[in-house]
Length: 376
Image (cartoon, rainbow, N blue to C red; front, side, top):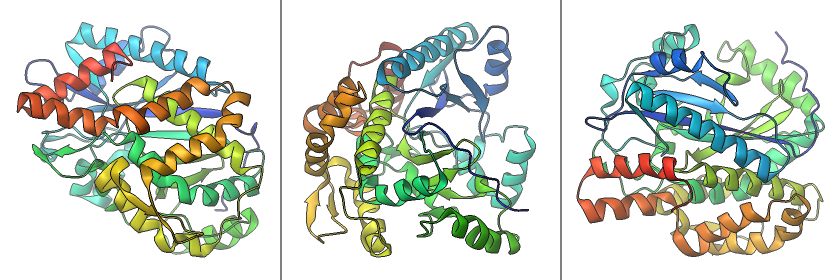
């Protein structure tokens, strides 16, 4: 069947989705408690949306459509407080972070939902290994062509979001030496990576998608695990490369950094995107995953090698007027603090391990970070 019509939405509105860990209080391993938590949360109004995810040890929360940093952060904090309170009643801890440091993937249980069961049958052990946790950010687009323009214009900035959000240095009990090991799990799926370079929605929907559907490989946009994908039913683009941060304050900062960056790109003051931009895309993505803010990236237009950290700081200076216009300077300050001073949450977690020598202590620090807010 044809791809659904792209729904027009207010440009630069935003929404945030966070995949969160459910953790046992006694051993700090993942807890297959999603059913119990979701059942408890049904009893009172929830300040957003909460849904199951692939395995029983994770949930996903989503905000309402937001326009500014203040209300977005306030809703994320309210969601966090509601989840923590419910978890306390069930003796379950809630944590951010892109991976759980020592969970064993083969012990995870697929959530009993038809789509998840179908994916488990298709992808085998990859489905359980997909017990990783990401932040997705939606940005509203006034029309479909604007969505594709933003999607491809952002390719050069994807390393920023990987490096800033990276919070998954540990996996299966060891330091992976990656700041974001989570994205390696995502990259294992056959329809991951980058979207095809198409700037016309008519060509995307009626040529590319029609061809893909005719192969039987895809049925809807949900079947694509691209780093950035259009969401026609929402009228948005969805950035999917971020690890779930340890705090909702960092999550709100990342969302508003993306919003301000999109406002800048829509001025069309930068050279337009082109296919050759993707010559360095996978290299830049690897550098951000492996080294985080200390990685190097290649500017796809100038072919110049630059520090990811320095490129973020230069971009913040460039988009400051947009932050002012969007009332998001507090969010941009959080991004500047991350890139210029305190580092990402992968750095924080490694410091916790260095001090304690224990992956259990790393989980405990993650739990406390979500509870306490902007202490990192």
